[in-house]
Image 1: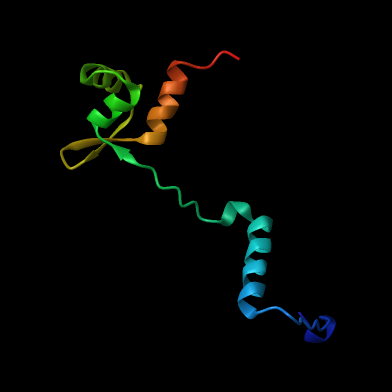
Image 2: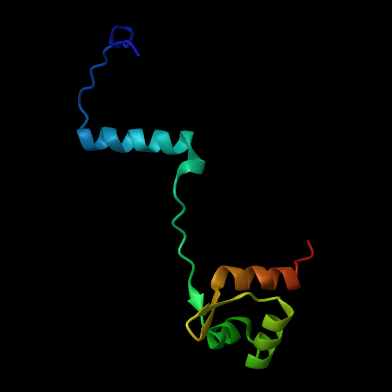
Length: 97
């Protein structure tokens, strides 16, 4: 771009940090899909899933075998993503509105 075509703008009464923050907000609004998603999902043990859903270990085991719950193996341990457990619960018992 030719520098002669860009008009000069003078900004007074604002700090550089504030200006940078405002520019970042505008860029975030323009390209929301390019922002990295930093959702951290809590990993639950089988016992924590039992407490969350108020079911037995046998039920969690059966739902895992049936594919209702999707476990993640970390070494020799199974963990479940909390959001996926809650989504599975909604899929099994959808609310009738």
